[in-house]
Image 1 (cartoon, one colour):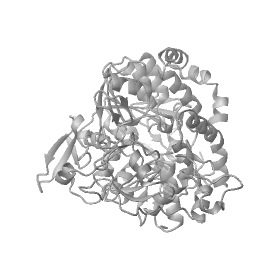
Image 2 (cartoon, chains in turn cyan, brown):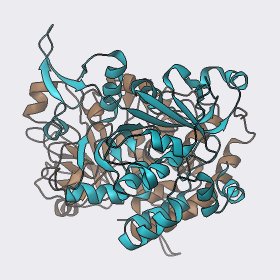
Image 3 (cartoon, helix red, strand yellow):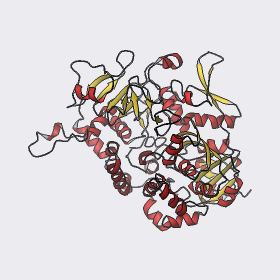
Image 4 (spheres, chains in turn cyan, brown):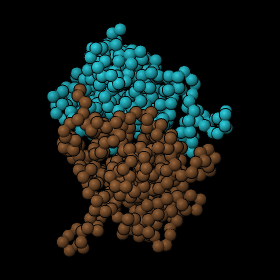
Length: 287
Length: 299
């Protein structure tokens, strides 16, 4: 089945209030072309699930598309804190659930395994259990020790950026996998954006690097440089110059309006032109 | 505190003081790593400590070049190229499941740099002020709860030892220290093990698992540490002095970090931003020089 879609069709398919898991990790392989389109035209009121989040959370908060964020981390690594996340956390304008890296994975895995929760020791002795009512302590029915029940996380959609995909929805990831396979399996509908769409025959040559399997995928969008301004190993690195511009804009409401105007839309080609064109990106970012 | 490098022609022989605080800290961090365990390289200091340990006393360490992949490569600290290094050096790629399994099995070690560390070993990277209306929202607990509920040894470092980072009680416990809750619910020995700062090395061997001094760095007085610490510290008399890096330690650290990424962790504001740009513009060249000829997979 041919699952190729346009970006605007993806935006149209995601209803208001949807729970959306986003793949990637901080400044690595975030599906930014899809995120920008949702930030510009998405219906909003979204619940986001991220393990290690960053620009996607910041941008969707900055464009007021989010009602709740489930996260283990939101930040820009060595580049600094996430301005809109900070503002929303500090003002309380959006709901937040602080999870942890493994518990987000366990919550997604519980959905995959169709069980209501998975047990762990993670979180014991920390304040995560105090502020996040989603978790429950319980006694191991066999030995009696205290465990934490991690409830299932059931995304309506997963958005994942991959190096290569075929039109049927198989996806190749060549760099770190992050938690993308879990997101793809746990979500009711998974949309891939891919640097390049290739034939099924060509894709199959990648063997074990075909990490995302088409039985879990509902849509494929071709978007070269689709992770920009995050990186997509081994093709291109994160654009830290743009990250600096982004952070400066996000810290200041008037320059944020300008940034939104200039860069955030649902036409990926316009964005690539706005950041200087593909030739310039190759020079700055290919490794 | 920044540079300890001796300067000027009138200075005494350079050999003894010709290192900087980052290099001293990396050396101390390296000495704690041993055995055949996975070592994470989330920060430049942690990556260099793992590299140094492996090249000196701990050859069996399985060092990662990024937070989640690239086992068996020599980590070169960069800002954006960790995953490219995995590929270029044909590192063994690991998955997040591999990482957390190693943590749960206690076959994983990491040096973590929290925003706050407290007297009882709790750490915070989540928020300054109350969680639901923080004065400053930081980043979220990330993987620290995983570490503090499973590892028998856990190491923290702070590059600026002040009453803002070393506190009586953290504002939010992202990681479990010592206390009644640990005893009741985790009941495991060990963690947290050590705290290294720019002033000294500490552990929780004081009364009721409170912070005590293991050693102070050369030139740091007990009074200086007391002034920078907002609660009474357990001190032995005389206080041992932290062992300095050897010439070989320094050569290994500098060769592994040609871009001086390790210095960024000691900078703030404008100097940090300039440092980032400077490294970012040069790091592709450094990667190519370090791993040439390219052995990576083709596209």
